[in-house]
Image (cartoon, rainbow, N blue to C red; front, side):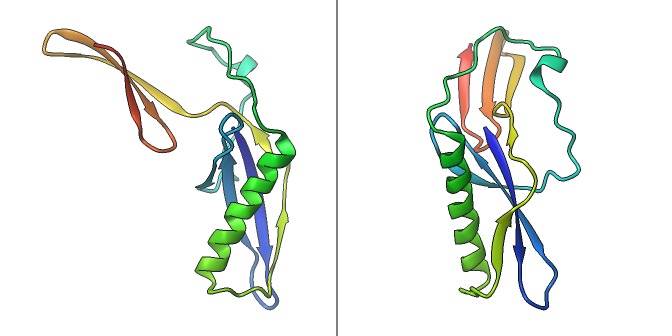
Length: 129
């Protein structure tokens, strides 16, 4: 995943911040909550529970940044009723990170259950039951 932050500057108004995430495998962009106060930690600095290798990046970083820009532009135009007086610029460096997923383990009707939940769209996948 690539996280890209933007700042929308308008005359006589405070700048607004917008954040987007882009899936580097599928190319889809998602609007995201602000992460200005989040400390990102490199994956090699944390304990890793899985030994699976990450998927191969299918789109270039530049393409991902452009997808994020298109998404944020579209959201801003819809929210501001086509107010084009502002200027959108990228601020900060893009953040490269793994896709957020939750792996839930438990017991249901005396059977072990493992479910993976997609942290972006909420889709769930039964890993074992």
